[in-house]
Image (cartoon, rainbow, N blue to C red; front, side):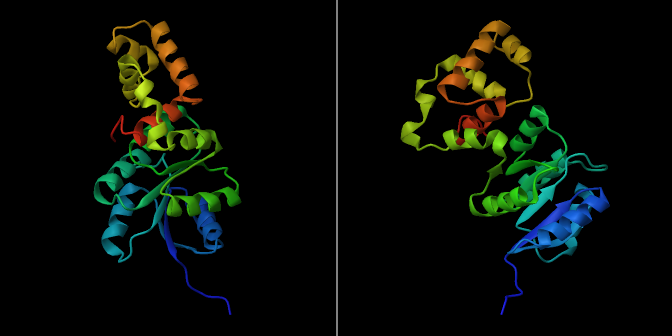
Length: 218
């Protein structure tokens, strides 16, 4: 006889009710997962947290919402409920948006057009490993999670480490160059050298490497 119980509790935060409803139905078809409820923004989520007895294991969090958006909601969750895992689920495929959500504490970032099977994988991995990243950054994560005795930070020059820390902020490369009193060309050189030496392909990878190797704190 098939068990009628579930293990992992999910909450959806999205102001598009039709999407949230469809997502709830989808997640409820995944074995071991059950949607508790959905909220239309961060304020509504805060109110739910006060009223509901159960906290979710994972929140599927939209970014562009009225009243209290995904960035603000993520900050509040990190400060008040750090044990709750969060997967950002958005239409925004922008590097700066991804960086900001990761810095604010998101455990993963997915696009809303993700295949249902990949969403299922993401939910399972964020439960089991504590994080999930799409194919766009998965390879980067593998390299940033290498054993400490293989970590390449020991080979980084002081200026490269400084640049790496600035790369974890919202500053543009031009602004980083101004802050470090260096030319944009020199900063481009640092970036490309780090991409090559750390086997990283984009700025998101730099941020993940810095976070995992304690070069930058959120």
